[in-house]
Image 1 (cartoon, one colour):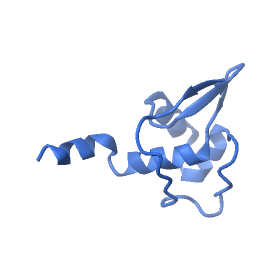
Image 2 (cartoon, one colour; image 1 turned 120 degrees about the vertical axis):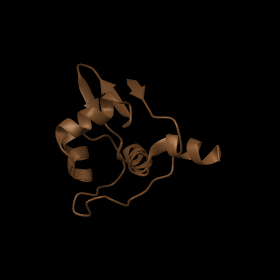
Image 3 (spheres, one colour; image 1 turned 45 degrees about the horizontal axis):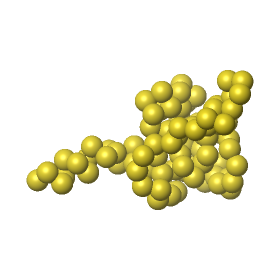
Image 4 (cartoon, helix red, strand yellow; image 1 turned 180 degrees about the vertical axis):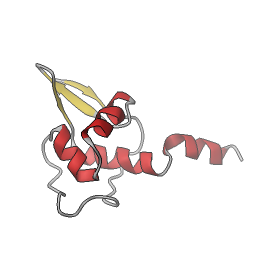
Length: 92
């Protein structure tokens, strides 16, 4: 199994989640579940994965899965400006 996880904090945040679609953080979910969880389109999930914002697991053959707890942390960083914002503040 090939993994790609974003560097940074492992803190889990539930803010911004759709309460009707929250599920247990155990196991891996597909792109459709992630899009539903955050209220975004499937194409936006693809974009966030391509930009290496969302961590994913690649299972053969061509099967992409996401771990909700890791995506929660990544989306929290993405929505508040990511690591670039922290670097800018530390330089002042």
